[in-house]
Length: 158
Image 1 (spheres, rainbow, N blue to C red):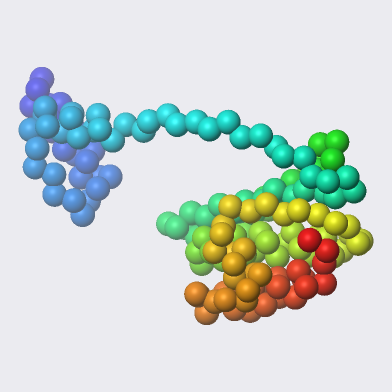
Image 2 (cartoon, one colour; image 1 turned 60 degrees about the horizontal axis):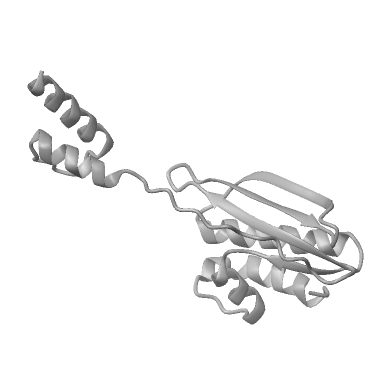
């Protein structure tokens, strides 16, 4: 039974990690797998209310490297926490930076198309925020979309 279990473990590891050479006995392999078990971490986040007359938009992008599929999403709320709009759009892109930048561009375009409003946009990509605000390009492939987004920001009230 131990040999069968060992063989099954080795076959599974070879399938999931074909480029890795794993030469461990059953006890060692079990210890490695046990150490790989995800730990549960949590953090309580509070939604901070914006000033009267402003809307707050929270955004995020998601990118899968292996198939280049991605998605952008976010939600806008007023001071009473009522939804103004919510979006979730599947896209295709080259990397996570393009995904985050596409999210930002979509949001700023929405603000432009929906009248003069004051707003706060929260995103989790400090790199994108810096690129938009300062037009710095650590990745030249992003230059055109950052320029477009920065132009939208320049014409908005944020």
